[in-house]
Image 1 (cartoon, rainbow, N blue to C red):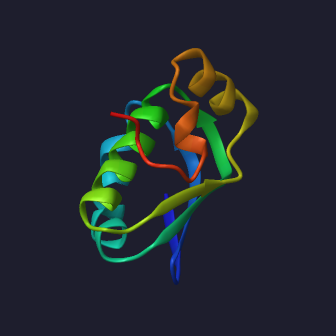
Image 2: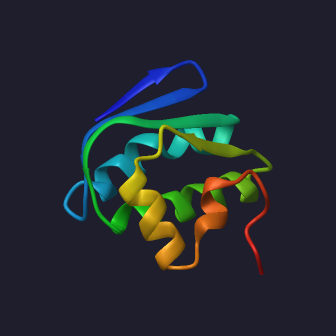
Length: 97
């Protein structure tokens, strides 16, 4: 599900309600201890739970004084982010209050 390449996390396979908790746990220490880039380009199925995962990663990174950026975000996830008003997740800015 996650392949670690230095400070890069490459996600693969489905990223849906049934898998996000495992992915969250796998990446926890990497997110808290490094500035990371999360690559979604190898994911196969994504639902809105991926947005919750992204938001949690951004919160954890900010709390640790780190940054997390996202690349290779599929179009359907971009559309969901806009629909739910969380398109800031795709940017590098701070989480709005």
